[in-house]
Image 1 (cartoon, rainbow, N blue to C red):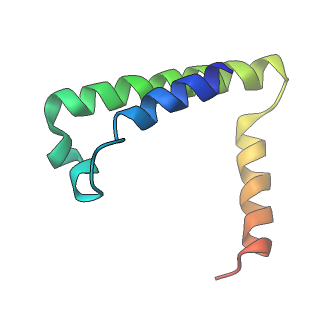
Image 2: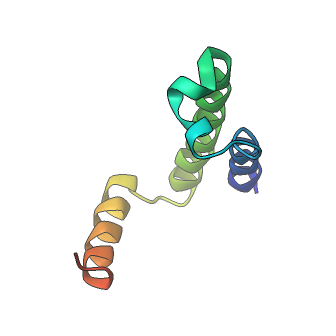
Length: 74
């Protein structure tokens, strides 16, 4: 639940922005700081969840990338 709520807070930083308005130069210093904080919150809870569930994140990413390369070939 924490991951979902923090991801929602990250999404809220972009809710009313256009694609062009979502780039670093358009966000400005204050906007980038807010996004940075929300990304950190999402990461903290993901790392904690992986720790509690004894999931090696690096292995999980490698496995997922291998699966995706089969599912979605270039």
